[in-house]
Length: 203
Ligand SMILES: Nc1nc2c(c(=O)[nH]1)N[C@H]1C(S)=C(S)[C@@H](COP(=O)(O)O)O[C@H]1N2
Ligand SMILES: [Mo]
Image (cartoon, rainbow, N blue to C red; front, side, top):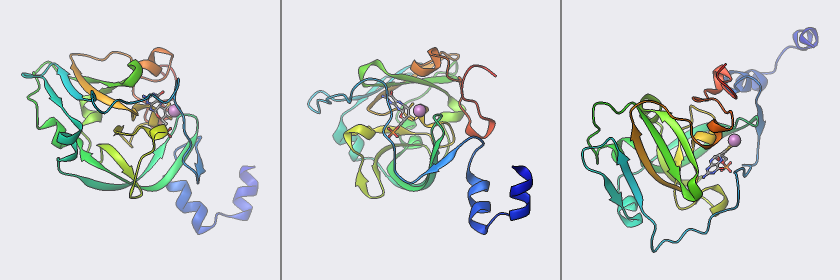
């Protein structure tokens, strides 16, 4: 197979895809829907977003307060551990830095547990949380994200496999040390970096 590829050569387009497609991934044109359980019915009357754990003062935000925060758009690829990659969507939301400015972290804080509806969780190091493209997203390609894709708010951490980008986000809990989240307890990798193929286990 390698020989055939060599003989045929790669088109410009294939080369461009190769440079940005992590190992073991394929490109999808449509945005698949993937999650555990049903799509939660979100009650906006009681909806809130909480910053808890190792912070000097916990913060609770309403959806209106979230919508009033500064916003930005980021054009980025995303990579799912089930091997699809979606190229070049325009994601819009509130930069993670804006959210983190609302709290003072205690010095012991090294990781965060992401909390979503129905008890879904995902763990991240602070280093992975505080990346420039990361956001709380409510729009893709100019349209509000659908209920299946996590409306009213999802996390967006494009440098890791997409399971870390929790849908139906409800809060961030700052922790001293790492703890496995929902999929990580089922054997997904603690970090999930697509270029290193950190899919399952602690390879
Ligand atoms: N709340 C919640 N968020 C979740 C999940 C989930 O089961 N529950 N699954 C994750 C997984 S495994 C993937 S691949 C992406 C899929 O997002 P999408 O359905 O918008 O493509 O959502 C992630 N976020
Ligand atoms: Mo996934």
